[in-house]
Amino acid sequence: MNYWLVKSEPYKYSWDDLLKDKWTYWDGVRNYAARNHMRDMKKGDLVLYYHSNEGKEIVGCSRVIKEAYQDPTTDDDKWSAVDIEPVATFKKTVTLKDIKATPELAEMKLVKIGRLSVSPVTPDEFDLILKMGETQLN
Image 1 (cartoon, one colour):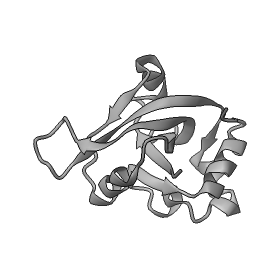
Image 2 (cartoon, one colour; image 1 turned 120 degrees about the vertical axis):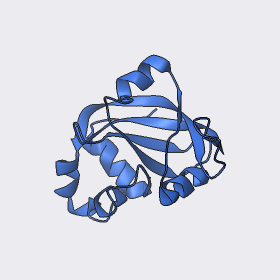
Image 3 (spheres, one colour; image 1 turned 90 degrees about the vertical axis):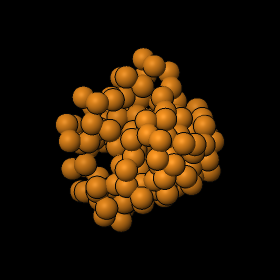
C-alpha cells in the first residue's frame, strides 16, 4: 500500500463535502508531477486530506476507490482523475505549522514541494500524522 496527500481549498471542495457525498472523483489537476502521482495511486491506497489556503491543515483520511482514468472535466487526454472515499475524520487537525515544527516531517513533500496538489507520503510520515491527529484507522 502507498500513502498520499491531496490538497483542496475548502471553499471549492471541503472534507465535509466529501463526507456528505460519500465519494468524489479527484479532478482538475493540471500539474504534471501531481498528475503522475495520481497515476501511481492504486485502489486501497490511503490519502491524507489537506485544506489549503484556508486552514492549512490535514483534516481527514480517505481511500482510493478507483485508479486513474481520463479526467471528466477536460477532453485533453493528458489529464487524469481518481475516485476517493472518506475513511476517518481527524479528531485533531494537523496544521502546516505543526508539521513544520516536527523534525521527523522536515522532508515531507508538503513541506518541500508545497505547490503540489497531490504528493506521496512515506509510511512513517503517514503514521506520525495519524498520531498527531489523534486518529486510528480500523
